[in-house]
Length: 166
Image (cartoon, rainbow, N blue to C red; front, top):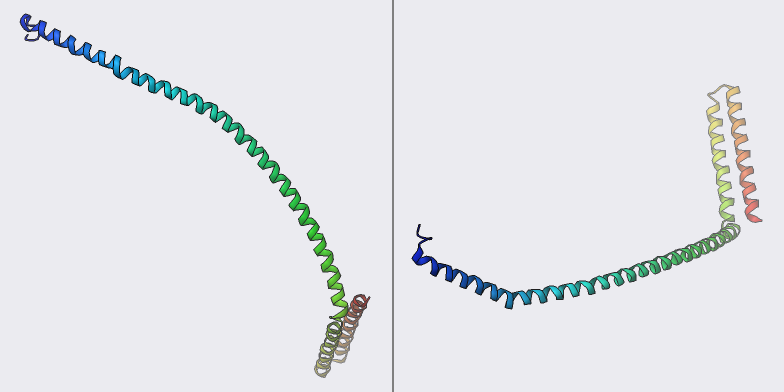
């Protein structure tokens, strides 16, 4: 085998040891200190960042608690303001609606009652003309029923007018 030849074996072994030891020397004296400095710097940064992360997390938790506290206060105050404004609006609406009904819509209520009367009168006239073709008992019964419903409607309308006038 040519690798184990006694003549060239010593020179091959010499150059192998020379390059291997040279490579190790360059690694140990140049690259390894640079790598160790980089790793130490990273560890230091990680330590600072972990301390910073812990303080940042504590600050974040405190900000969240303050935010939730402010938000709950804002919700309660807005709810109370909404309730007060709603009650004020409701009372204002009730008073104005009754005053408007008393003053402005009294004539409208009266004209509505008159139109109801006219409608019932026209229905009665229609029944009167239609009753000619119906038997007498049935025609009288229909007229009496219509008269009773008209009286009931006008009684309710008169009660509502008197209530709005008060």
